[in-house]
Structure formats: C-alpha cells, structure tokens
Length: 477
Ligand code: NAD
Image 1 (cartoon, helix red, strand yellow):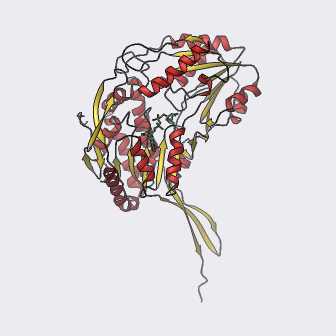
Image 2: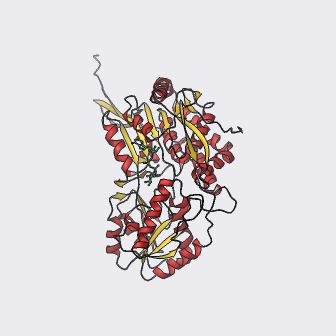
Image 3: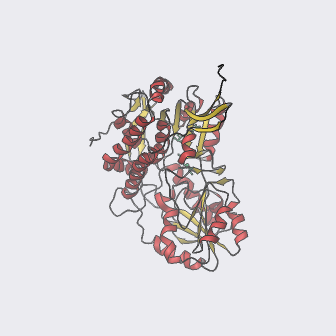
C-alpha cells in the first residue's frame, strides 16, 4: 500500500506536474483550507491533450484483453488503498467514512464489472452477394468532467468504459473535490502507460477549455443541467460527441398498500444519502393520503436516529453540504418555505458555527408550486406531498423539465410496474432507490441528460460505429 503525502500534482504524460498557480480546497465540515492543488494553465491542458493523442494509437491497438486487465487493475488499486481514499473523500467532500468506504467499494467493483465487457461485432448480412458487419472503434481523446458529490465513483464511471474501449482520457475533477482524484492519478501513473490517462485540476474555465479543445473527440460530463447546456453548445463547434448526466427532481410515489415502518429506512436513505447530494435522490415524496401520516411519522422517527456532523468523526451518518454555494442555495429554500408558512416536521434551521451544516429538514405537504417542490435542493431538505388519485400523482411527478429517475413503493408489484412505465424518467426503481449496476444503463430523459452511461449502451457511447460491407466477387473459373 502506498503512503499518501500531502502534495498534490497533476498527471500529464506519465509525469507528476505542479501547477504554475494553485488554488485551495476547503473541508466543508470545518471551513478550513486543507490543501492547495494545481490550477492548470491552458498550455498544461494542451500538453495533457497532446499526451493523450500521442498515446492513442498504441493504446487502441492493444488487444482488448490487455485493456480489460488494466481496467481491473484500477479497481484493485482503489481496493488496496481504500483506507486512504476514503479518508480523503470524507475530508474534501464531507460525507461520512461509511459513505466514503461505500464509494470506494462500489468504484472498485465497478472496474471489475466493466472489465467483463467485450465490444460486439454484429454481422447483419451474410448472403451470397456480400457480408455486412457492424463494429465499434474508439473515438480518440475523451474529456471527462466530474462534479463534487461522488468524485471517485463518477470518475470511474467515465474512465473505465473509455479506457476499455480503447480511448485515452483527460480527466478534470470538480475544483471543490480534486484531492482523491489527483491521488488516483499518482497511483495509476505506475499502472497505465504514459499519456493514456491524464488528470488536470482547475476551475470551471478549465472545463470550458476542454469542451472547446479541437483534439478532444468526446466529452463525458456529469454536473448541473445549466452547465450541461454550455458543454453541449461549446462541443457543437467541433461536433464532439457528448454524454451528459445532469440534474433531476426525482419523485417517489408511495401507494396506500405499503407498510410505513418497513419502507421508512430505505425511503429515508433514498432521499438523504450523502446529505441528499445525489442526482437521483428522492427529491419529492408523494404519499397516498391513507398512509400519509403514518409514513411521515416513520420517516421522522427514523431521521431522529441519524447523526449529522463532521463525517470524519465516528458515529456520524451524514456530513455537511459540500460547499458554500450549495449551502446558501439550501438555506434560501429553507427561508422561502418559512416565509410561506410551510410546516416543518423536522429541522428547518441551518446549523450555527463552522461548517456547512443543515439539519435533516422535512416539510409537511407544501403547495405543489412552491420552490421547495419545484427546485432541486441538492441538500437535506425534503418535501412530503399528499395525493389521493393515481392519475393526478403521475401527472404531478412528470410535470418537470427534467427526468432523471423516480421510484414507486407498493406491496403490489403489478400496480407498481404499471405506474413505473408511465414515469418520464431514465430509471425507475420499485421499492428501492440508488441501485446502480455496471450492467444497467443510466440515462436522463428530457433536460436530465443526453445519452447513457453503463451497460453495453453506455460502453458504445465511447465508440464510433463502423459498418464494413464486403461484396463477394465471383471468381472467374
Ligand atoms: P457543475 O455543473 O457546477 O460542475 C460540474 C463540473 O463541470 C465541474 O467539474 C465544473 O468545474 C465543470 N464546469 C463548470 N462550468 C463548466 C463549463 N462551462 N464547461 C465545462 N465544464 C464546466 O455541477 P456540480 O455543482 O459540480 O454538481 C451538482 C449537479 O450535478 C447537480 O445538479 C446534480 O443533480 C448533478 N449530478 C448529476 C449526476 C448524474 O449522473 N445525472 C450525478 C451527480 C450530480
């Protein structure tokens, strides 16, 4: 196991490279600056892209079996250094150590899952006249841009399929959470050939330079819908391929046949895991009026058993909100609810003192058009809403510009399934939330995204389709 030091550098062409300038990273639980990291210049981005471009011919020509081994080795590296990665994620992101352990375990398993895949070759015609074959070739240099909520897992969601399919990568973590990602680069320097993976850190401008860069062929982006639109606009200038995984305002629909006590823990974690900073967290919970009071009661009772605090402390389940900007956003939603007289079943007042702490806050049946219902809080503030008619609740659930995921809770699988099929979202969970698998495509409908990640569908987004037709010549006898 490698001993981590407190220096952070970028990975460019197999070298650890400092920045000409640096910027600070803040621990959201204490508001202390805990590290300074390189702020990449445009020239350094150019060097990273040039290294990735130069590494592409040899990397893409390697047998896929070798690339699979190396993708699996990334997982092993995460596993071997689990303790330190987990410590760093908690320090920079704020989530509990259990949450960070979970992120590393899932990331390591993900690499193994992706490493099972082969690229398909489909023969769609094999007639006396010709054969027609569909194959898939890598795109070239992939620019991967990640957000601050789940920094390592989302990086792996991009790296593993991009590298497996034969692309080389330039990865940029969020400026709020670059530490674990830069450390990953440090360790992978000894595992991957120079230039195959490059990691650069910097602000939003660096992301924009990547989407503008003529030698990047595809951008795989996870972040807000607002930024996703800018990425698409900028990528259009060079017709880059884009995969966009963006925001959502996911509805959970709870039918009257549930056992409130039984579903409360899973529903709670589906809404509040990672202090609700999850793109697919339940952000509006619609509960049938027959069980509304009972489900609300069980959720509140369960919430009271959950400890909010500095994620690095033992016994803490939920950490702070990750950064000041998000903290202010959640506070403004809290005060809007208070201004409009919404009743809080729990919480409602932001924490005092250091750290971006918001207590678990649950709002009792606010109006459908209130900000707390219409806006993605991306923080521990959850509206519970009453319904009594299935058609009405489906309409309310779908009445949004986004369509990332949703969930249905019922003891009747057939009824739940009928409702699931009518939700306008890329994923629908029944009686659970947050189940992810390397084999299950994940995509956003409407303004929640473009394209898909995971599974064969996600893998093929890192490739070009190539059709080879071969006319069978009649040989003169
Ligand atoms: P963000 O859009 O502010 O930033 C995401 C990344 O984009 C960061 O690395 C940032 O530096 C970079 N960036 C910013 N401006 C850019 C530009 N003009 N061009 C290129 N890159 C740019 O998002 P965030 O605040 O880090 O993340 C929170 C949002 O992400 C939430 O809306 C959440 O729902 C969404 N999210 C979606 C998924 C998903 O898979 N759909 C997963 C996690 C988070």
